[in-house]
Figure 1 (tube, rainbow, N blue to C red):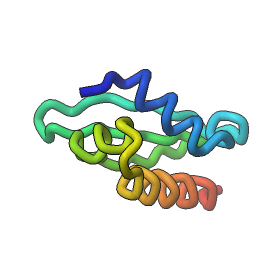
Figure 2 (cartoon, helix red, strand yellow; figure 1 turned 60 degrees about the horizontal axis):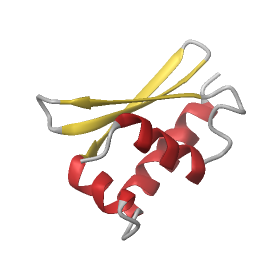
Figure 3 (tube, helix red, strand yellow; figure 1 turned 60 degrees about the vertical axis):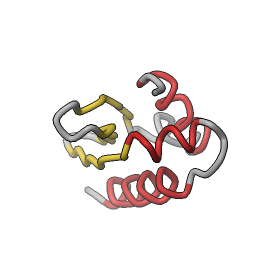
Length: 83
């Protein structure tokens, strides 16, 4: 399993505007759900999504990033629409 810094870096490489456009990224592993919690914060709004550890590992191994890509893209779009 990868660590949170590696997953953050992968997300930032995939979505380079995270951070630059005022969206802060945080990743932590939730042991009770056995999934990565990806949170995006902008101003006083915060949205979270869960990323299955298996999906994260597959993406990090360079095989397939569909799950990570779709979830992060939707999360980024949703937080970008908040005022």
